[in-house]
Amino acid sequence: MSIDLPIIWAAIIAFAVLAYVVLDGFDLGVGILFPLFPHRHDRDVMTNSIAPVWDGNETWLVLGGGGLMAVFPLAYATVLPALYMPIILMLLGLIFRGVAFEFRWRSGPDSRLWDGGFWLGSSVAAMMQGIALGALVQGIKIENRSYAGGWWDWLTPFSILTGVAVVVGYALLGATWLNLKTTGELQHRARRMAMALGVALLVLIAVVSLWTPFINHLYFERWFGWPTAFFSAFVPLLVAMCAVALWHGLTQDKHLQPFLAALGLFVLSYAGLGISFYPYIVPGALTIEEAAAPDSSLIFLLVGAVVLIPIILAYTGYAYWVFRGKIDPEEGYH
Image (cartoon, rainbow, N blue to C red; front, side, top):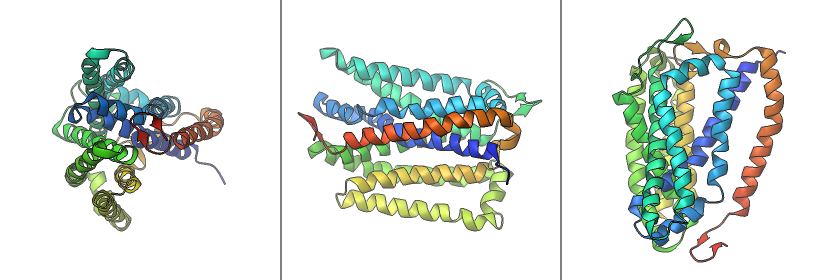
């Protein structure tokens, strides 16, 4: 039996991107929520909750982006020119966020400036990730195996909508993370925010989901054509179940359940993208097989991935295990 290396690598890249979204999403969300917590003490507790893990979470972004370049060079060479501006702005946001995260501890009375930088970097990074996603869903114009669109093709009403949806979704992850990791008034405020953000995100998911099938006939056929419609119908059903679990967890003072439910909403939305895209890696333009590097390269890289990914997973799991539990506002973790 032959091994379909491009599909295996597509699954690995998809997993790396999903891992980045669900892991880095909540700490970006904490930064997005900064203006809603004006007191320095609350902000210190918020940053303490993500300090042990936020840097490692971005490992998955490097793996996803680097893997795409090495394994699907044609997709990388066509997608990157189409998304230069949002990707550059995203990277600048992540850099500025990282600098602000470190400098706010050393700036004393001027920490509010760096707090603003932490919020701005987090918000810009999240918004640009959503815009890039929306632009990819819309489709990228390719002719003769190269990008043939304009400089501003990425900026449309649909991509702005997806950008807002990602910002709200990350803010929900951040609020449910704070509900999980903090205590007292900070936790109560985060829980109340999560309720409002959950409703807003479900509305945005519904609007994007109803809009997407009418962007491309391939999406419409995948979601409403038979027999794929039978399997696709399970996604909105599972989204509804996660929404109920989120609301129940928040109203019944659960701590872990709302965070897991919010993660479930992201995973299911991501699965919906997979249903829409497959077997394309650039929707309507390049399939996974067409964009893949030669098998010899895929095998060589797969050997490294088989060694590297379990190490990253083990390190990540160990870090979360060591720093499990609630944040003590005075003493750190306990």
